[in-house]
Image (cartoon, rainbow over all chains, first blue to last red; front, top):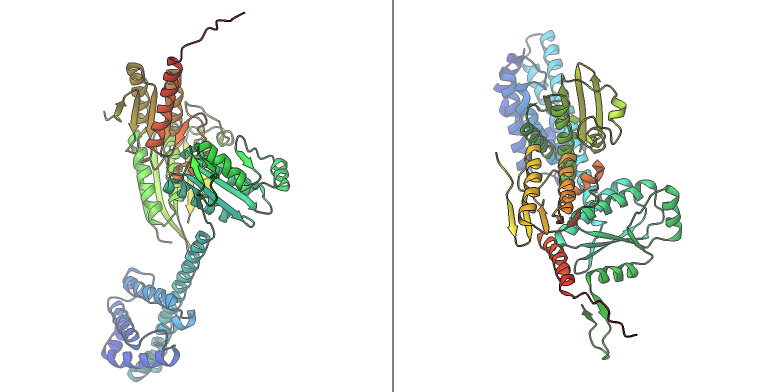
Length: 289
Length: 133
Length: 135
């Protein structure tokens, strides 16, 4: 059957392409894709489809013979996802090929039975290919969303350089496990990049700390220490202090300060720096050793 | 779903290094973050060493896995050694029969998303771990 | 058998680990260091692990042992350059390497070692004043 199908389609390839394009243009948004690009994609797909039909009997599209067709559909579907098409518009690429093929089959059919069989086989084939594009489309969209989420996470975790060798990480809002982990990784990365040996983690803007967050905090501090940097926690309010004690989390010998300024002073002292107000009005503050 | 499978024999200390390298390549190929890659490789190192030291040698099976859109790696360590009589004890931190710190199994479990172990004294041990992106 | 080279830098020893070590190599390093500290009467050991992408519980234990053994031989060990991913993983593994001094890089590590030597020299130079009391 496949051989017959191949023969019919191969003979009418040019017509098929033309009619198929017409069907697609009816349904597609012309602002999202150029006609030239659509023509090229359609021609390529038709060619690959015919090649797959030519080389064998089975129409199970997960087989090796259909690798190139699937690969091509993956590319088309992924690019449609990026271009902003909807899933059904993307599947239309495949489904709109049905009518032109059926028209050809009817023209060439020797019997009603043959026609019914052929139409059925083609329907099965194009349906599975169409569904395939939808799946790929879905995956691409999810990948895009995941990437956007990561970028947003990165933007919302600012690590600032307060001083030579002193970093500050002001944490704001409630910290969920995922965010805390990525924030902590960002801090450790900055420690390496800036060669800072002191990091002040300020939690003034964090209303509550749960066990998981407290544990992440501690793990980060331990990791920083392993790397050769010390952490100071600042902005611990009485409520959080109580929560930490209540949770049984031990801060060990981590220095804690109630304010970022206080932590900063400690950091400077450790480095042997201090900020001195100069006696002359309008003079620059100097740092002394 | 279709993925790759690689088998690495674990017979010498150098094989543990090979397992690390192959695990790294697999994890990186699946798009895991650097931190997650390191966790996979470190867990692989722990388990490979266990296979060598306690299991008297065996094999590591390294696979890439897909679950819908999620990608990951699955590592299975198999040996036909003496087996572990008390698995629960072995999974507690600090347990050791050898000269190690005993952090092998519980440590590896903490580093991965999935962990399972089967062991029959006299027959052997099989540990499976997986990490997802 | 391959070994990890140990460089002598004045009163200190410098070890840079560039390869993914198998267990035997790590243990040989530990032995070689002990021997060399003794032989050179070294005051400090700088262990540069900035190229190590994996530190598992065994290697972690070797590092800890190196620090311990050196201290017994009166040499201080500073481990420098641990990569963030490695640090995070070690903590997750449950290893904190307590008692091991760490620094961000070779430069800082050398500063720490030099400070110790200087401090000791300073202490030696200062004469012990046995008070002459004027009653």
